[in-house]
Image (cartoon, rainbow, N blue to C red):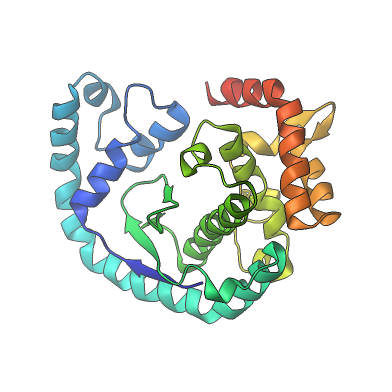
Length: 259
């Protein structure tokens, strides 16, 4: 597995940001824009038409990007160097976790360094995003999270043969894939180089999972027990069955937390 960090330019960033500013977007995703870019007036922005929103966004961010371009390009080198320094231990850890030869997979992954505070991943296209304000350590932490998704769904798809469209929000398979990152990240070769691990450091999974309890027990702790005591395929099966049995509670918690 290899990652190439690149600067995709301002138009890419604007399009990426806009994909989280739809009328049906959760504030959990959309509001980070206004936190990191106070020059974008939330009330003004939300009262515009879709076409005008994009124009407004371009007006506010294009000049900012031009001032940041050299800094972003400098970060590419730092991100790349820090990842390359640790790539062997990452591949070893993921190979063991997923019981495959990780070094032979995903050698074409691209990390687009973007102005978007949200970091989406595109499984079939083999690219994901990293917010430009990350340090090289933070960029590696984000990259580890995203790379785990690629490995998870590679093994999952090989086992179950379902469609990649089932791996996206809001499906239960997507929810599970986001939660299991913490269990897999617990390997010392991974957590030692991730500044967002453990939960006390901010966590390497979404905040609404970190305080989620099912029958009085934190769901991440339950998943960790399943991970520690099963093969990866058994873990996938048992954790998915657990989520199906508790889907109503899981979805209610996410909905209430995100309001």
